[in-house]
Length: 382
Image (cartoon, rainbow, N blue to C red; front, side, top):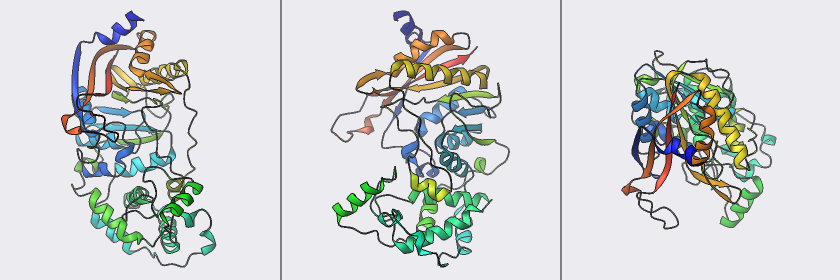
């Protein structure tokens, strides 16, 4: 085991990048505010890695791209982007995020939608009354029916906007008080409503969409997200089976493997799936042993090796978490796998994510400044 650890602990370089857990939405383009809490890579880290290990015109792959945050940073740096996600809702949202509309396009499109068209109120049945006022629900149904048949990037971007405000705990959201991250179960939402003594109130859909659109494109629509010169492809695929990605087509792969206890994967929102008109993603069973996880990362890095050309790189983001009640250092677990992959990958170095001094205190009072957030192991394709 000591020799295995030495493989990772004796790199050619050891660098550091500072992160701030409160900086997801303020350290990047305003488009990053749409689903900042689902980003596995903070904007400064993604920019640093893409700029450090690729050139303009190169192709960057994110094997689990979520809602496309890394794609925005990649395009801004003049690279082609390919992303994969298992959840069809994430695929749809990532594609919309990488082809944004400007505020004028959004306003004009909304003007041609009849939000007040009569809706069969029998559709407004349990559990929707626990989340929405009936008039809000009818407006959502009318908007949903129009956008479902839409083919333009404007319609897709409006879907992204609605999905980002569909439920949450501020008046800018369309639901009564709820979680903005995940759609609570109906019984949980009913209990929350009783506890707060609230009934969902009317929320005008069009006005909130326009306000949210203005915030997301506050920094403008980047030219690199408008041009066809840069590829921005999103595929529905698993990390260990990225068949749509061509063999040897990638210069840099970003790998943030599923690490139970460290990162939350996906949006986990049946309401968003309903609005987007896609099947709700059924999450796979989490690894419950270190052996299962090492098998999973082995498969992921083998498939990544297929997509990355010789001389290219993969940057693997790992940290600490738990498998059941057992604490796990995923960096050490990764190190135990790398000797079996030595035919494909050589370790070049490590980049340590540390919480910046500005991070201050997190909820719970634990001081973060200087603590390790995660480690990025840089692999070179042989």
